[in-house]
Each structure stands twice: as C-alpha cells, then as structure tokens.
Amino acid sequence: MIRVLALVLPSLLLAGCFSQQPVPAVDRNSTAQSRAAIAAQPSGPGYYTVKRGDTLYRIALDNGQAYTDIAAWNNIVNPSSIREGQVLRIAPPGPVENGGSVVAKPIDSGAGIESRSLDQPAASSPVISHGGSIKREPRVGKEPYSDEAYARLSSTGEAAAKPAETRVETKPDPATAVPPVASGPDDVPWLWPTAGKLVAPYSEAGNKGLDFAGKAGDPVLAAGDGKVVYAGAGLRGYGELVIVKHNATFLSAYAHNRKILVKEGQQVSRGQKIAEMGNTDADSVKLHFEIRKQGKPVDPAQYLPKR
Image (cartoon, rainbow, N blue to C red; front, side, top):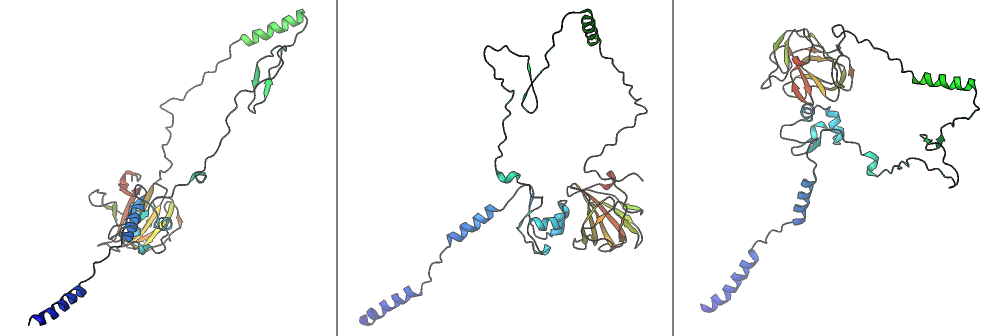
C-alpha cells in the first residue's frame, strides 16, 4: 500500500502544477499611451467635450456657431459621427503670426551726423528730414544799409508781431442738436419676425424666446440681415427650424415651421420671408423665436423695436 501511494503522489503533484492558470500580463506600454492621449487632448476656452445626448447641431446653437464651421474645424465629415468624450473646437482657430518666426526691425538711427573739419565754423542748426538726410535752414543774406532796406525789414517785423486773428465757432443749441445714434459693430437693426400675437414671453427658467400665435402658412420673416446656418429638423423640440447668423455675436432661431423656404448657406435680408408658420414638434400653430448672443439665449423683447 505504501509503495502504491509513493508512486501515485508525485503524479498528482505534477498534474496540479500543470493545471494552474498563467498570471495575466499587463501591457504597461498601452496604458501609458492611453494616458498620454487623454492628457494631449486640448481643453479650456474654445473647446467643448461632447456629453451623452449631444448633437453637433445643438452644440453649434449653444455656442453661437454654424455646425458646418465646427465640422470643418474638427475634420468631421458626418455630423452624426460625434461620440461621447470627444473634444471639439468650437471657436475659430487663431492665426499664427509669421509662422512663429522672429521679425527683425531696423532701429531708428535718430539724428544725422554732420562731418566737417575742426577749423570750419559751425553752420546753422541742421534740420533732419524724414528720410534721414540733413537739410539746412536758409541763411539770412547780408545787404548794405539803405532807407528802403530798413523800411522793408521794419514792416516785416510788425507783420510778424501781429497776433493771429481768432475765429469764434458757433456751437449749435443743445436743445436742437440731433443726438448721435449709438451702434456697435455687431448691433443688428432687429425686425419683428411675425405680425402674430405674442402669447408667451421670454423666461430664463423656461421659455428661451418668444412664442407667437398664428395660422398655418403665416409668413415668418428674417429679423435681420444674415446667413442661414441651419435649416432642418435635427434639434429635438424645435421642429422645422431655421437659424440665421447675423454676425460674430448674434444668431436668431425660428422654430415649428410648416415649410422652410431657404437653404443653408443662403444670404437673407431683413424682412425676407424665410418660412411658413406651422406646428411641427408643437401642440399648436405658433412661431418660437429666439435671439442668442454668443450662443446664450437673451430676451428678444430687449432688442426688438417697440410695436
């Protein structure tokens, strides 16, 4: 019996050794590369990290940009291909001046230097021209004394001694003066987008614009000159939507249209009919109108003229 155990026991031990699973190896190089890739992603002002549920259209609207521009800045071919965690440039790339090279500018040499011998008498004060050359003032000519010369010099001195005649400028009456019109480079002469009745005002906590009632097919007008940067139904809650970019500061949005009459990239004029009122993605026929400043909703009533 002992001999049998002596023969079987080593075999069992060897089998147990061969049946153990190998220890998994950790690829430390790949881990380091992934950390380096995350650290290399740009961040800060001008960049946005995509969150779950984001669309390129929504990101563009919230940042006051055209989605086509953001796609171009990030080499995006399909607007639907963005993914959670992706970092997008949302501001125009800044120009690199002179490719980073140093530009050497000549130093102004200042006044010119006159060369003359030591025994030569000093001339009158030189006048330095803009080109750097020396010009001398005309010397006073000598002439023999005579009564005519004395009278001529005396009359010249009296004329120079007379004070200059002062003119009194008449200022307009402040009451009748027309005050200047204050307008900044990005100000827009806004126009009401519809003649419909205002049924819902702006609210920071809820309504991000103005809601107007109307009939299906009522004209929707561009509130200012600009370029159509979006026309479609890709933003949830807006239905058939038109977005016009007026300048680097202001956008305007027109939602729930029945029919869109303009195309992306088209220039539109203030008062131009761009859509027909409808009820797409809404419970009734209405126009939802927004003004966005740097991508942030503002109260349109503060910018539209008084009715």
